[in-house]
Length: 448
Image (cartoon, rainbow, N blue to C red; front, side, top):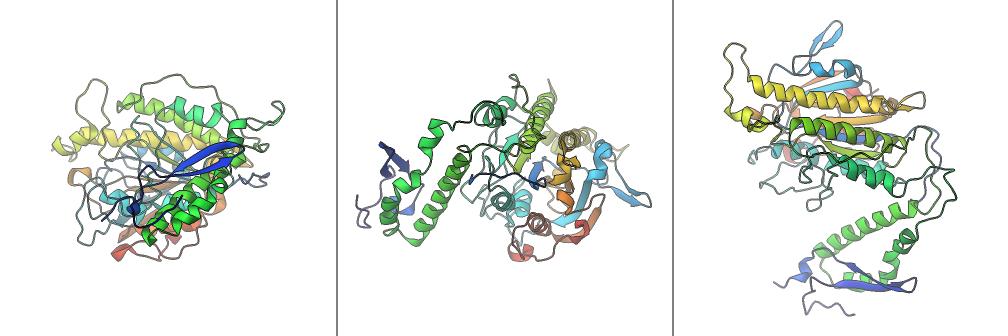
């Protein structure tokens, strides 16, 4: 096949080849030229570091969440009180701002992606770069079946804030059964469970790139620089999938902490608060076991979406509607129903952290070897504020950080936190962020 610039590429262009006597074809990503004008894992002597994010929507109530410092440590406030049983595992990060540099405050978007991509979006819904946790997944996810496992407790696959690039987002699982099937129903077996034989389907899917390599080279030679970049990014993703498949062709090394759970039943997955709590509880346990079995070392969890659609059973008003339509009670000085939803989100966070702490690993727990970063999209949803967005960490990252800290910044760029998370995870990076949010100033107060 000849690829020339005189004629535009067809959107249906395929790279074709032969593999094990069978014809195969690989589709291509969107390219401007289409339009005219495992390695296998070994035994791990020390538990590996895991990193993940945990997200909740619509922030907190000013004066009712941020801990206060005293001689005996920090004291939780009414909205953070559900965290009392796990506070020894936490750090609180307050006073960090998303600095927009004159760009619009796109509600429920600008705060999230200023924090996670280091770029304040110019246009609503247009993410201008990948999010930092994908760089961590690239660092930590080598040698596991899944580079990352993501889930949302809301049942809506659109509720995700993890982007590999400006165009590619990570799609979450939306039910406990789907998450179970992905992790445990196919491909995971413990040593001693019969003779190990790679799945023939897996064998037939690997090394596909080599079968079309010559056509790929011919295609690249006739593409512009931007299309070559896109094609390289696309084939890098394909190769990553192949590497995950290759891991399934070798006898697995399963840690002692690995336990095989029962398959969950069917559960309603929607924004009903009771259903969200139940789905989140089930999926948190499955994720914890997946990490104990070293199937992944990275994850992203959404408890509630950014414009929080959580609602109580039988009620029409959602958390988001309450933040804007509920009057401030003159007797107590805050929005009572809105505050109740914040507390429910914190109950979810406490349950997630506890799920990790309940899994023994080495001389401690799974949580001890995790760094979990929790955040919201706004500080005060009533006015969509992106100053002082609430953030926390959980776990000690295998001894890399200390806990029990309350870090209070003074309007510092929120990218300081993303930079620090990457550095703790071993990403070789010294500066991060754009414009006024570019920084080389790590949050050293939490480092061990």
